[in-house]
Length: 253
Image 1 (cartoon, rainbow, N blue to C red):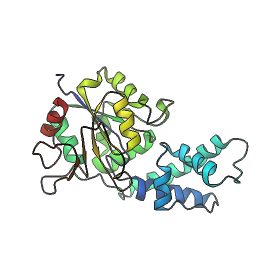
Image 2 (image 1 turned 30 degrees about the horizontal axis):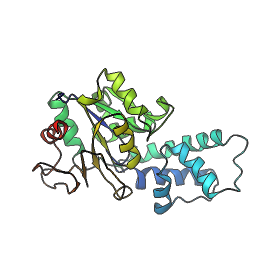
Image 3 (image 1 turned 135 degrees about the vertical axis):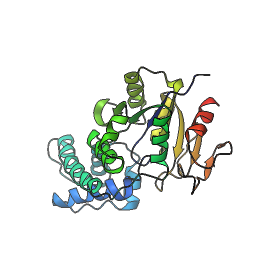
């Protein structure tokens, strides 16, 4: 059995619960600034999350919910410009400290570094979103802790396609069997599993009903020594919170 060498993290919903009170809020701020009377409610945004990528969600919303809306001759350019302003508002939220890391994430990253495991990120969010989240929560130096940050449009096909994970693994010069992925959503797990990665899932409010067949384990959170996780699917092997020993045990199964 191959020895574990690297941890590869999704960002939105996995490192931090960014969707409901981060990205959704920023989208609505961008809409208001543009004079649009659009309101992405918590429920509606959950439906839009079936598509990965912010620009893609804007296009889906127009095509599925606003069939009479005129986005001009180039809907892609319209969505890209609107998404650029959304990113501005999202970064403001991050800089204000309004979006903390999920429980146990910082401890796990620190332990991984202490034990010599390599770290990477594979996400559909923009590189700027990753940089600002890491800086706001772990400090500016944390951006260098991750050997590869695969983000945004670095590959043409976004999750659930496996491309972003495959690209990250190739950049690290590794094979999938020495890596463990961390995800929170159906599209994310489809992506990681298609890249032949064992995957640990921590659900959130939007993804708790998703089908995670094929994941190594499904938890409500990573948990801490003080507040453990709840196992939703799989066998935690007696562990009560996610640490490197538990990950290595899962990887060897």
